[in-house]
Amino acid sequence: MTCHSSESIENERRSEPVSRVVESDQSRIAAAMRDLKKTGWYWGSLTANEAKEILQDASEGTFLVRDSSQRDYLFTISAMTSAGPTNLRIEYKDGKFKLDSVMLVKPKLKQFDSVVHLVEHYVLLSRTTWKGSVGDPLTPPNGTVQLLLTRPVYAVTPSLQHLCRISINKATKRVQELPLPNRLKDYLSDYMYHV
Image (cartoon, rainbow, N blue to C red; front, side, top):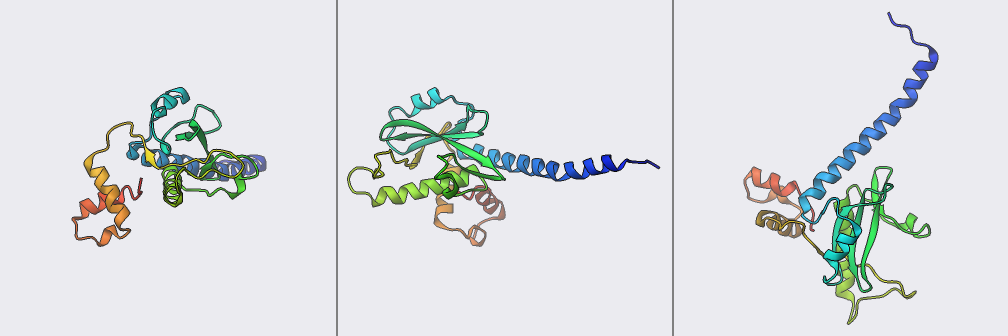
């Protein structure tokens, strides 16, 4: 029979929820990494200067996702704006991903379960904003540059299968109802994003 002091039992109880949170965070981040690696536009440990060089001659709205060079952040979106290449950090907090921003805007920013969901949201938002603009891209009234995410830069050329999967997922949310073999339905369901 083992005897534990009340202090050691209390310490175990306190550390239990923390370990679950850490485990949950690790599994969410691991899932986010798996999804990101499937995209083709995740570049890994690319530096800000290397990203700038890649985007230098790209059109506005072209973007890529890379590892953040700042320790407090996991990922960064590097994108071409009307003022040139820029970087947006992606914050991970309380199991959710969101764009880093100034304190006044931060509470209003939408949060996502994965980085790919976050990027997909802003790509769809940018495409509707871009289509709604006449002539030059819309610029906020205070003179700041509007960020558009419209076209990813691929680190590797995506396979035809992956591009078809994206097209099918754009066309329907009912993949399981399609008259396809189960193996193909599983492949389509493995990456349900539109980007």
